[in-house]
Each structure stands twice: as structure tokens, then as C-alpha cells.
Length: 290
Length: 326
Image (tube, rainbow over all chains, first blue to last red):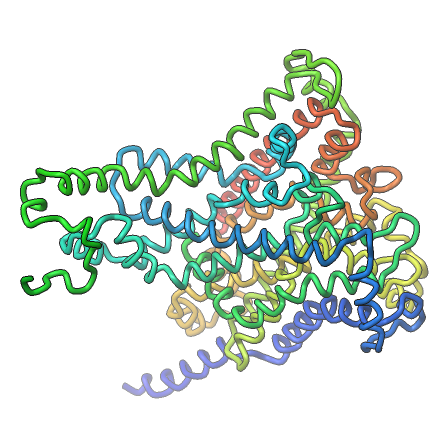
């Protein structure tokens, strides 16, 4: 009885020490945030400067007033076709996102909740495919695209990516966890067909996970670099390809390139500010199940 | 009409089963409902498998087929068996690219995962503004690799780069980062780590938060210091997650391509002495600069095998290290 008092107090003390943040932790976190944010900040600083100023010593660390001029040069650049790049990327990323959400949730639901012959084998095959690196297929995929005449055309960066194994797997895991069997059985007893169950029962339950998958997919497609570079032409680029076209062979115009980079990053930063919380939740959720 | 039984989710009139349909199964709608149960699952998974067969499986198999031919953009396509593989395996430029890839993988990944662990441990403390901190840590992931590569190439440039400017304070002048192997590796690794450390930290953080607090409290009562708690509780409990991130990093690291490509201003050779050409760059160089598809396909299959081998080694090593401690 005598011990409980002090020990209880001491225990409270240790818990505070355990979970509170000391000065060292705070300094480390502050430094990390500065390092994380600086390159993004620098991108916008250089985008508001002339190219001559970028190389001066000491370097400019606050924004200047050249953004308008840089933007005019960026969108006027005949080689890079930046406007077309932005439009193409918006089309590709939206299409791939919508179709990934549809196909991944359909397949994820089937794998999680429907009984059919060959289910486990199909699931195993799908998991194995997630190990295969993208680059493996680039050469034959390119040859295939050349064969059917899709090189240089936007569908070449859309159609092969309409659904991913990663998306299906993520949807399956979430369906398993979030959708009780009773709900499906009840719908069946009410006379619902399977497509109807998918539409009215499964989709509403999957909404949070679909938000995360949608964000991931949009970002990934928007940022894709290698495949557009291989299969598209300079006449019909995506936005990342346009960025690459800004990189002149003899002379590097940093303020122009940084303006392009800033414009290409801005939509994603906006989405991140709006939905960052969900994205973090999604990453941490996925990690728990891994 | 009788009182509606299916209030919540009434099916469309056409698909509505008659009362007998559910019990006996005769008639058109009964058959329809049996077909539905039987074939809907296949219908639902077929888009994925169709697309995968066309754009995933077929290319992989076809790569192997092409790799067994003397296959160039124009000219004859002669079956040569394993000749391409033999040529690649005796090609010093290929082994140079393997060396660079593995080197940059180690230089980038080991510090990255260690930093992510420390960062996660710090984020796991109680403090205000947690969501904001996490978003700040994750923000680099939103930027595209191309954007990162452009920004960092400027930061690391010889004459006007901020990094050299800062190094100048310490008496290091005009370092040409792209010129030497070690400095190019370092600069490229910094790009990779900047983008991915926060992501890995969040994965570790999630795993840390699932460790029961009682463990720490018991250890604290037994007099274990924070550092000791980290080593004896946090690390062993995180082992599966660490293995997971190491394997993901292996798959990503062996495909390293965009960062070194743009760091070298779009040069597939990766510097004048190929000091930072990765395997993927070498594959690209053969396919799209030399148009030697057969050779490039052999390189890409060997890359795939390397990734499998790397993941396996990682897994075995980490399991042994973790097992020894626990």
C-alpha cells in the first residue's frame, strides 16, 4: 500500500517523459521540415527571377518580380508545347484515375467477398505480378505500340495503365476489413443482383479508401516520366515530357525550367493541401496491414 | 400492389425475382440470378486480368523472345538462343552499370531508412501540430521525379549551385559534382532520399503506434533508458515493417533512372566515363539510342533477376539480423 502512491506518481512521470518531445527532438523536426520544404520553396523563388540572377553570389533567397515574364516565356516556348503538355497530362491522369477506381474496386470486391472457382490462384497470380518492375515491359510494350500505331498518341500512356495490381490489392484489403458479410447477405435476401450490390452497398463503404487510391493514382500518372518519354513525340508531350524539352542542349535556362517545374507541381501541391490528411491516413493504414 | 418488402434497395423492375424465383429457381429470372452468382465474379476481375495479359504478361514473355534473337530496328531477326545473355554478361559496360546501381542503392537506401526511423521516432512524441508536421515531411513525395531532378541538378551545379556556395564557407571550392563517381552518387542519392525519407517515416510511424504502450511503461519502470527502449522494444517490433520497406526500396532502387538521367542533362550514358549510368539507363541506351532491341531485352531480364536476388538477400539478411537480436 505504501508503494502504490509513489509508484503511481513516478509512473505518470515516466509516461510524460516517454511521449513528450524534448528540445533535441524539436530541433531535429524543425531541421527536417526546413530541408523538406526548401527545394520546393527554391523552385518558386527561381521561377520569379531572371536567369542571370540565379547564378549570382550570394544567391537570391527571396522571390523576385519576374514571374509574369517567365510564365510568358514558358507558355510561348514553341519547342516545349507546355500548354498541350498540361492538357494531355490532365486528360491522362483523370482517365486513368477514374478507370483504376472502377476496375480496382470491382476486382477487389470480387476477391474479398465473392466465392468463385480459381479465386485463390487468381489472387496469387496478381500478387506475383506486383513484383515485376515496370521497366521490364517497356521495350516490348513500345514495339507493341509501334505495331498498332499508337506511338506519339495519348492513348499509349493511358490504356496500359487503366488498372494496377496495387490498386486491386489495396481495394481487396480494405473491403475485407470494412465490409461485413451480413450487409451483402441482407442485400441478396432483398433480391439484389451482384452488380447492384456493388453499386449500392460496396461503393459507399469503399469511399475513404477510394479517395486515397485516387490521389495516389492521379499523382503517379501526372508524374510519370519514363514511359511518355519512350512512347510519345515532342509534338504531343505530357507535362513531364515538356519539362524535359525545356532542357536545352547548349544553354541551361534555369529560370525557365524552374517556372515549368513550379507550374507542373502546383496542381499536385493544391491537391495535397486539400487532401493531405486523407493521404497520410491512407499510407499509415496500408502500413499497418503490410 | 402489396406493401413493398424491399424498401432499402429495391432492384430494377426487370431484375426483380418473382416470389417463386428465390425458392425454386425456375423461369427466366431464376436462371438470370444463378448466372449472376456464377459469372459476376469473373466479370468483375476480368478487366484487370485482360489488361494485365495484354500490357504486362505479354510484354514480359515477348521480351524473353526478343532477347533470344539478334533483333535490331531494321535487318534480319535471327534466332541466337542465349547469345545475347552471354554477350551482356561479358560486357564491362553492363557490369559498370550494375556497380553504379548497387552502389547508389546502398548509398541512398541505408541512410534513408535510418533517417526515416529516427524521424518516425521523433514524430511519435506528443506535441502540437502533428498533422501539419506529417504533411511537411510528406510534401516532397508530391513533386515529380523530373521536378526534383531539375531542382537538385541546379542546387548541385558547379558554378552557381547553392550547395557549393555553402561548401565555400568551409573552404571547399567549385566541386564538380557530376565529374567524379563518388560525388555524383552522393548527389543522386540526396535526390532520392529527399523524396522518399518522409514516406518511409510515416510507414514506420504507423507501425510504432501499433506497439502496445504497456511494453514501454514496463521497461521504463524497470529502469530502461529511452535509447535502450528504442533498441530492445521499438526495433524488434518494427522488423516486419523494416523488411517491407527494404524490399520496396530494393525494387525502386534497382530501377533508378530519371534522377541520374536528368542529373546528366538527359545523357543516357550517365557522364563522360559512365560514372553514374544505371542498369535501366543502359537498357534504354541500347533500345532507343542503338536500337538493339535483342540486347536491351536481355539487359532487362537480367535486371529483373537482379531485383529478385536483391529482394531475397535483403529479406534473408534482415531476418537474420533481427532474429539474432530478439
